[in-house]
Amino acid sequence: MAPAANLTSALPASPEPPPRPQPRNPADLFWSFTWLALQGFGGVLAVVQRELVEKKRWMTNEEFVEDWAVAQIMPGPNVVNLSIMIGDRYFGLRGAFAALAGMLTFPLILVLALAVVYAQFASHPAVAGALRGMGAVAAGLIAGVAIKLFSSIKSHPLGRPLCVAFLALTIVAMVVLRWPLWWILPVIGGAACVLTWRKLAP
Image 1: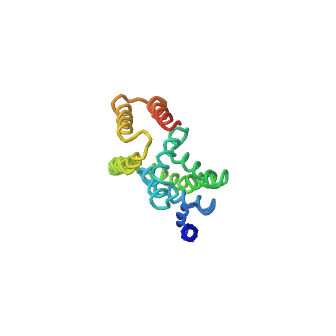
Image 2: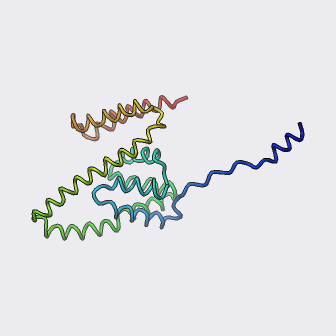
Image 3: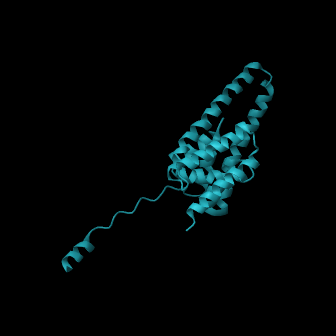
C-alpha cells in the first residue's frame, strides 16, 4: 500500500485555470471605456457586450446580464451605471471615477461638436431621412444583443421555460400594455427576483 500511496503523491497536480483578464490600472479603464463610448453610435448596448464580454473578457455573459439588470434599476443611464460598477469592482473609488470619466469626457466633446453641425442642417429633408434609417439599425443592434444574451439563461436557477415566460411578460407589458419602466421593474422584475431567491435559498 505504501508504494501506491507514494505513487499517488508523486502525480503532478492538475494545472490551475488561467486567471481571468482584467484592467491593468485605472488608466486602462479610462481608455477602454472611452473607446467603448466612442463606438456607441445608435446602440451602445451592443458595443458594451462585445467589448466587455467577447473582446476583453472582463465578464462572462451571465455576469453581464446580472450587472446590466442592476444598472437598469439604478437611476441614470444604464451604461454609465455599469461603467461605475465595473470600475469600483476592480479599483474602488478611483476605478469608478476613471470609468465614468472615460464614458463621458470625449463623447461629450464629440456630441457638442455634432450638435453644432446638426443645428445647421436639421431642417434638410435628407438629414431627417438619414436619421430615420439609423433608427432601424439601432433597433437591429439591440435585437441582436438580446439574441446573444439569451444563451446565458441556460444556467439560470429558474430554468429556461420560466425565464422565457418572464421575457414574454416583459414584452407584453412594454409593447401591448405600455407599462412604464417603474412598473415593470418592481412587478415583473421583483417577481423574478423573489422566485430566484427562493430557488437558491438552502
